[in-house]
Length: 346
Image (cartoon, rainbow, N blue to C red; front, side, top):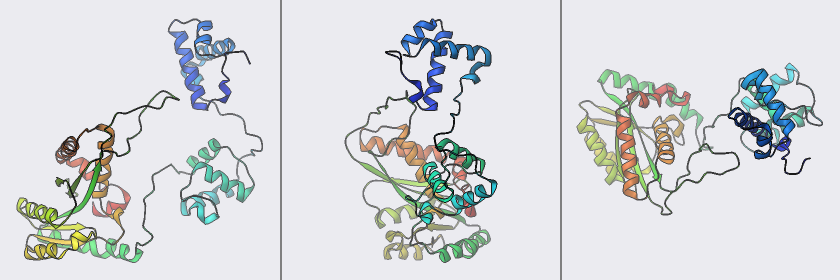
């Protein structure tokens, strides 16, 4: 290898493509091929080849190309094996087959193929197979081991349909409620940056948090309060009081099994205002059934990527601002009811 020249073959396919495009862009911008070779530490022959390809094929000619099979990599899987593998990935976890982990990664699928069929495939080939099977990488729903499937079935097929029917007869509104906390030291979302250069985002070294409680409806309604400190009956009851005073019709409020929701003082207040509000409890350990959880995720994601509060007051202002904007966007609120797990409530 020529001294001072990098071995581009050691780069990932994506990094190789990026290098080719930057070199060609530099030449197209007026840099000579010799200068480009020196600046980007690549062989002059490579620069000449990339420029020629670009001139003949355009930008598409610089796309990342698939490398040949790795040593030991074998030919394509048969259709029968593919059907079985797709079923294994779609219906089971790696642990079912004695593999490590609880989610399917390309590496885990490659190991399953090696163990079951003695076929060694590259991660790129495995990814191509997965996409051809109609699968895509998705964030899974966490489901507690303690969840009672029968209680969930009963809620979806009997309890909630009965609540919805009563609400229609009474001209009432159904709202889903939940609480969440937003911290100053929450993880920051991803950002684009040059390859190999980890970006830096400023944030305070202090730790503080605020809490939000929201009630949403499938027509786009949103009611909320932002508070600091612990969630207790002194926070919950005043919120219920404001909610019922604001609305001119009965509320069927769906909540989870948080101890505060079952507190005697709370139940007594609800019983005393039975004409204005009725509270229903989701099955235990089933947060995925509450569309308000999706709002919480949206709030946290927005706060972690769009703000860098230095004080608790700034964090609280940011949370209130997001929720006020959301109140003016009923379509966005309705979209929280679009995920398969909560579509029953739409």
